[in-house]
Image 1 (cartoon, rainbow, N blue to C red):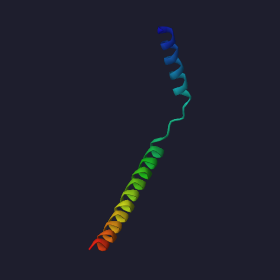
Image 2: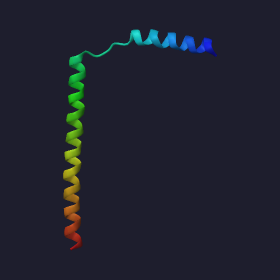
Image 3: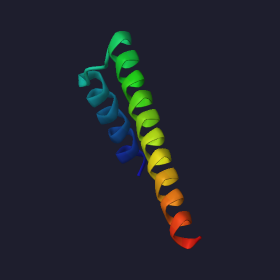
Image 4: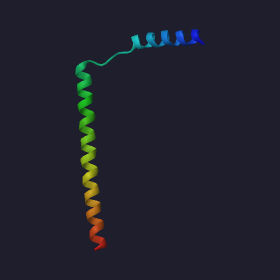
Length: 61
């Protein structure tokens, strides 16, 4: 059991060394993209919700 765990950790470290990590600029750019898309979707869904609730209210009254 301990031998398998040791081998797993060694393999994990070896794979992490092969990974290409993003630069600070790439990370910042991608983070801003995620924030922008999240805000856009939130605003879009808010507008759709408002329009649908207004439409439904006018049918009920």
